Length: 262
Image (cartoon, rainbow, N blue to C red; front, top):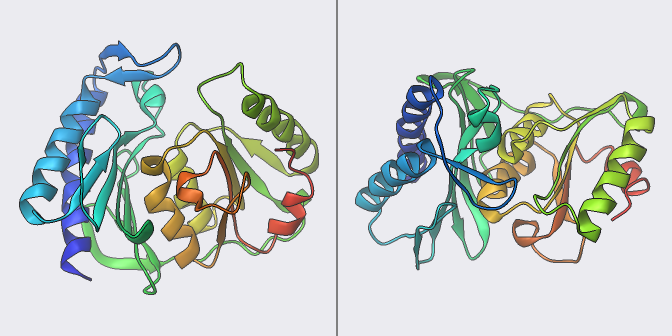
């Protein structure tokens, strides 16, 4: 395990403890848009994570959801609390997501689920793993699922906040199609955790529109290191910056593409 991965894991643990404390009584402090919330816990987590990573890796850049942007390459890409809406309702599906990216390619990724006490992590070309959040001594190597037929697949989808767009309409239509053809479709509200679930085989695929780099960076690497596939659906661009992306176990990927209307 590299020093950088150890730093990311420690930063995720710091944020996870802040999240658990705030979860007892979440306080909304701002609406960034009509449906996009900010709680008191989001900036607290961001400050703690940024402060720790700045002191540990002073020459690295940082990009974080709540506004921290420090130039540099490599750079940390951080979502201090992915799934804020869930958190604000005490709906227990949210996480911390931290990735280190070099030239827009993830080198490592960490996703921490404070409620289930789970730590997902990966390094490029070294595999993806799941361990206890507070004890990494017995990690399990992750592998994506083996389902090929869509009728056997459990899929999740992520929607953009802006609901009066063509993108929202298209992903809603795809959601409807997949709901009829797949075993089932979920809409859980945390892009990073859904990607971790694809990597661990709990989900067979994840279709997302409107996500940002901090939602995706760590999860993209996890899926790829576990044997899955992540691709942009709106162009040949890097899915890290894509308006719409698909992550899957790779085996069902082409079958999914035939059904998706983007």
